[in-house]
Length: 379
Image (cartoon, rainbow, N blue to C red; front, side, top):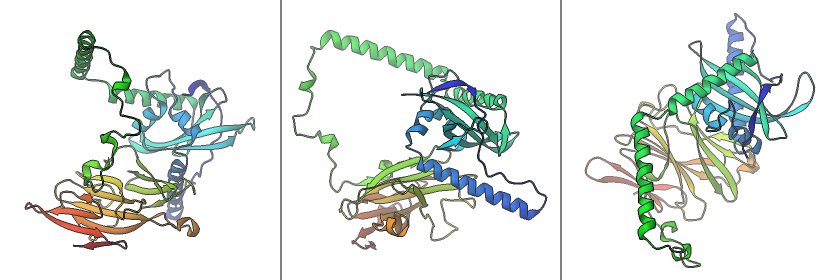
């Protein structure tokens, strides 16, 4: 059920790590460090609460009278580095306890990047209302926050407004569909659904996973700079994990594995052999033309797949990282995925059974690496 937005605003206090203004370099450095720690905390909280029902109820809810778009869709289209976090807090004035979903994200304010922090207060009748908010830890009034939300929806409408040609194309498609349906109903006898169903106990051929089937980058999940976070869900030896790829803040790319059980995230290493040849620039951002790709592949055939991450421009450079599962990670507070192999190629890669194939040159040459149970061996 979608939560509806309730008009009004609670004077609900925000708990923030606010830096003190100072002319000294040391104070500025401490302030920057505090902000970096707060940003990291926001991102980890976002990962921990990504499936929280209260967070989802707000993200999937509607406000500003807009039933055609969810709040989450509008916010994540407008803000960079969006995060969502649930907590139970106390109203500063009434001392009443409330369920709160807090949003943070970056946007341009007075021609500079600013961090917005906005709270949404949940009610038992499946409604919510906007609570306190701030820009760069400076409290903002209800009027200012309301104007910001208006801008959020205006921006969404501008980005999603159909062009005249697209609108005409949609009308043509709809008209053709109606015409085809009418023609079919006039010429084709009715059949029961049972006639089209596969016999009991059989699986349609399209659903069968072919053993040894080759996988290339077209079969991976793909993320491009500027897109919303990509999450690859995977269960390894009964442990639910999420591999998160997305834009870090204020710059760089985040590659994180998050444990649902431990509510903790770890960075996945993406170092390269030579810093002069890398898919990332000096700020850690993806270079123009590169995309990140991620999938899971069971090289050993033991039912516990490895995670394969690749960065490729599809033409000249491809970088590959393979991570395997650490069965003892929860006992030693270690990352659940550790780097098992790193390699480089050119136009792409293929995963074929127990091997990785990296094409190079224009003559169909391939570097082949086979998993032997301990690691990958160059053939």
